[in-house]
Length: 633
Image (tube, rainbow, N blue to C red; front, side, top):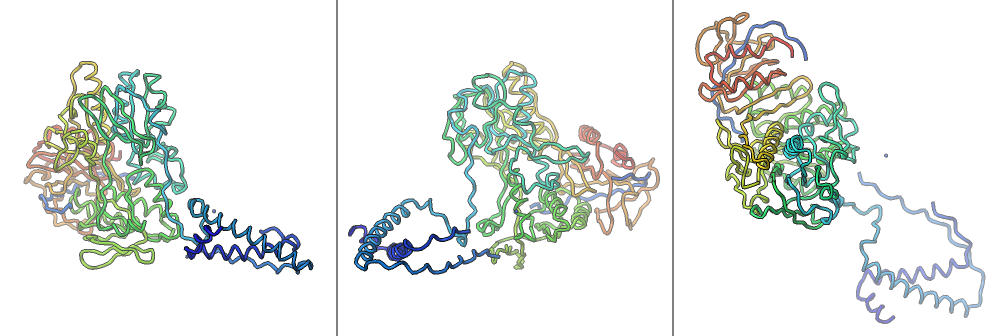
C-alpha cells in the first residue's frame, strides 16, 4: 500500500486520480443508501471546306467549425440517507474508502500500462491514420516457391504480357506481383471518365469501379474480375493459370540464379524467395513530388494522383465542406485532363478549380502556340481558372488554407492542392538487381527486343528501349505500356520455345480529352520545340482574321494545287482570336515527319501511322487531304 502511494505521490496526475478516487468513495458511500438513479440517455459535322495552313518554326518553349460535446446534464442531489449509528457508519465509510483507494491505484497502473485502450474524449483532436492493409495473400507461406513467368508489377504492361503469354501457351504459370491492393486496371480514366461517376467519393471496393465510355457503354476499370485469376495460394498446386500477389513488392532479383525476393508492403506478410524461369520488370513509375509543397503535404493538404486509391480519396476530400477551391499544380497532359474533369464534376456546387503552371499556356511543351492558347480557352470555358507563369517555390498552411508562394513574391490560396508535375522511374529494384539504368532518361536499359539480361525483360515506362529513328527513349503512356508489354510477352515465350524474338518498333501514341467538345490523338514525337505545320478546314476556324495570301509554292507544308477553294497560310502560328475545331498538325525534323497530331479528328490513326512510315513528302497540304478534314468520323 505504502509502495503504491509513493508511486502516486511522485506523479501529479496520479495524485489527482488518487484524490478523485477518494472523493468518489465517499460519493459511493452516500449513494449506497440512495434510491436507484434513472438510467442515462450521414460532335458535329463540318461543311466542305476551304483550308487554313499554319506553320511554326522550331521554338524554345520551356518544358520545363469545431464540434463541442454538450456538458453532461446535472442530476438532482440524492436524498438524505437514513440515520445510522455514527460509529458503524464511519467504520463502513473508512473501509469503503480504503478499498476504493487501492482499487483506484490498481486501475491507474493498468491504465498507464495499456494506453492503447484509452478512449479519447469527443473534444480530443482526431488524427488521420491510414488503415493497416493486409497483402493478398496475407502470408509469405502462401506464395509459390517457383513460377514459370514472374511479372514484376501488376499494371498495364504486365497484364498485356500475361495476355500474350497465355494466348499462345494456355497452360503457362504466371505470377504478377504488384504493390497496389487491387486487381490490374487501366489508368487513363483516372483523370477523365472516372470523375463523371456520381458516387465516386463513396466507393470502398476499388475492384468494383466502373466508368462510362464515350459511346455510353459502362466498363469496369479493372481489366478482368477476380474470377479470371487463379488464387495465388493455388497457383503452385494447379501448375497453370495467372495469380496476382497484391500488396507485395519484389525487392531484388538474383539474375544469375533466377531468384526473386518478395516483401509485403509495409513489412506485412513477411518476406519470401522464389525462383522463376522468365522475368519481366514492369514496375511503372511513381508520381514526382514538388519540394515546394512540402509544407502543404505535411499538413495533409496536398497529394499526388497516380492510383485508383488516390482518386477515391481525392473525391471523398472534395465532397467535404472544407474544400471550396482545389488547385492543380502542373500544365501537362494529366494536369489539364484532371482540371477539366474536376471543373465538370464541381460545376454548380460553388467550388472552383485553379490550374497553375510555369509555362505561358497549358500543354505548351507539346502543342504549337496557337493550339496551346486554344486549349487554355477551352479550359476557361469549362470553368477552370488558369494561372500561367506561376513558379511555386514554397507553401504553408494557415487556418486550413494552403498559401503557395510564387517566385514573383505573390501568394496563391487554395484549400487543397493536387500535384501533377510528372512522373519518375524508381531505380531501387534495378540497382539492387544490378540492372543497367539509363543515367538521363531513367528506366532499365534494354535491347531492341526489350531484353535486359538473360531471361529478364523490361516493358512499359520501366524500359528504356531503342527506337530505330529516335534512338534511346522511355515511354510513359498507356498505348506504349500495352504494346511493349505484349511484345515482351511474345519474346519471353519465343525464348522458351526456341524461336526468334521480334524487335519493338511501335511508335508511341496517346489520346486525351479536355471536356466533351475537344479531344485529340497523337503519334510519334510530339514536341513543341520542333517545327510544325498545321492544316485546318477553314470552316473549322472561326473568327478568322488572317493576312491572307494566295495559294502558291513555298516551304514544305505550303498549300498545293487541287484544294476545294483558296487556302490561307499563317506564318508563325499566331492564334489571335481564332478558334480551331478540326485539323491535323505535322511535327518535322528537317523534311521528315516525326509526329502527327489529330485535333478533334478521330478514327484516322491508321492514316497517321502510314504518314510516319513514309516520313518524307513534297507537299504536306496534299498529305492533309488524306485525313478528310471536312468529313465526320
